[in-house]
Length: 204
Ligand code: Z5A
Image (cartoon, rainbow, N blue to C red):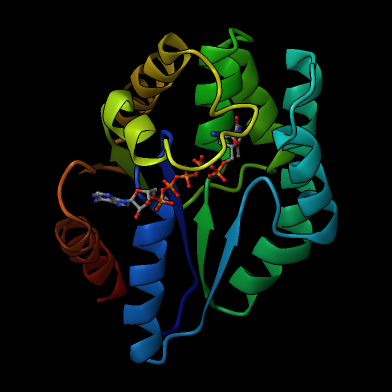
């Protein structure tokens, strides 16, 4: 592998990001490709602490919430993502800027354009080479995770989750060069097959 690859995974609740990332790791590791997996919020000691603050039940101002996601990202890029890309690794990242634009910009109502600008500034214009958006009706996604206790954001109203899906659809139209929409209502094996078709194309 002569070049780095930065792949992000986006979607609503229970869309299957974690499941897909695990399958891709298994496949690429078997080919001995250098890779790391990481997530947002999180990925660094500071980021994981921020994640805890963000997901525990509390009343956070939308602006405080946005600032915390961005603080986690700034540290994550500096400490984990850029160093891994400099070592020509494949970086598989569970959520990135698109989540901030969909959740805080659109669903929280802080403004898609404004939040996009903040994201570009904080990430110093670092863009994924490829983003998989796992598209799923929120009714199905929330049903998939109904057995486990919901975090602060998962517990939002259905209309919040519907707004997030619409925002991701808008992002897919805006960034067709990097954003691939996957039908996440298919079986895990089918979603994996669809994703690998694109990944293999990029590895050639
Ligand atoms: N957030 C934000 O607001 N702003 C930001 O800037 C960022 C994040 C970065 C934490 O994210 C929260 O932070 C998240 C967005 C917000 N809000 N919430 N909630 P997270 O990624 O850690 O949390 P999550 O999206 O809630 O993860 P998740 O619910 O675990 O979803 P997932 O990883 O996409 O799904 P999964 O764990 O792979 O699968 C869920 C279940 O479905 C599990 O039982 C699987 O076995 C099953 N599954 C998976 N795939 C399938 C298929 N294809 N068919 C049937 N069943 C399946």
